Length: 101
Image (tube, rainbow, N blue to C red; front, side, top):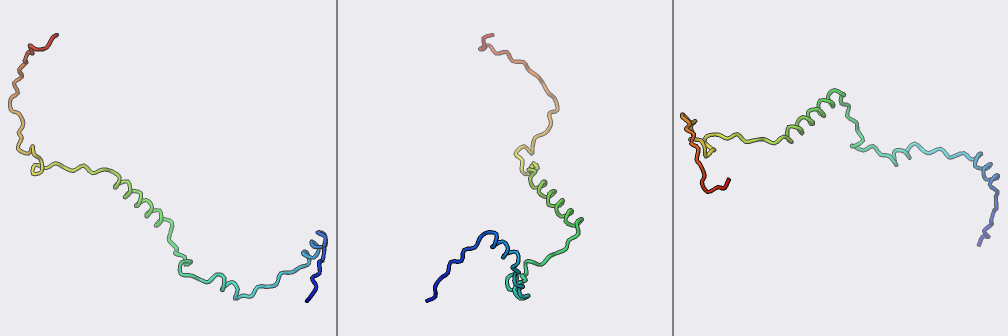
């Protein structure tokens, strides 16, 4: 069995060693292995006016959908389809005798 040696080093000596240390060069194949090209990393170039038009169209459509639609009453659907305007209006004033004034 090998003996384990405890090398004690001061902070100044360690800083001096780290200043001289050079990191090894990574092989070119390492980047391709870590970051493979995927289909969702492709980019699509869209002109700014086209994007602005699409956003504006979506906003307008959203605003139109939020406005409630009032159904139109037609004579066929209405129960009041056979009513006619009044030709002559006669007003009568009735006195109520049962009310205390």
